[in-house]
View 1 (cartoon, one colour):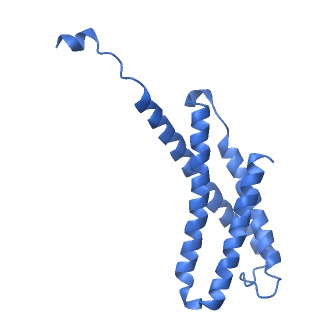
View 2: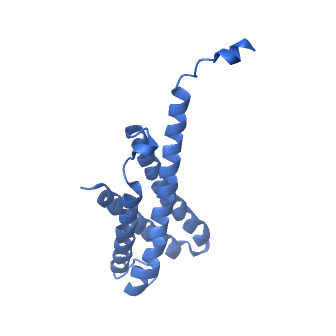
View 3: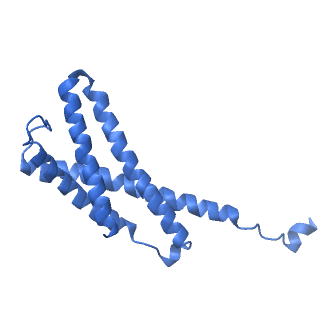
Length: 158
């Protein structure tokens, strides 16, 4: 399975699972909806950012020189976000037909356009922040590990 398909499948399923949990929570505890929405958002963004961080760290360790290239994680995450967002929208629309599942009664057009675009942004942007942070941290670790240059003759004469 390619890297972006795994990411799209796992994060799309996580999105639908969180929407299902949020739907159950809204039915049984309707006055607690605000913090439940925020909690679901934090879980999704945290999972995506953590995966992006691991990708960035792994890529920088495999390719220590940023000028020489590395994996194109931007396209991997963009494909994963688009497929995961569209798949999550379609799955949420289908799950909404099952009795006792309350996911908002959104139509298919909404789920595949506005809903999917929001999910795409929720998957892509935190992943790119995580990738950048992971690469930065590994680059900083490697700079600390390098020995300091020997003092020059002019500096030692002072």
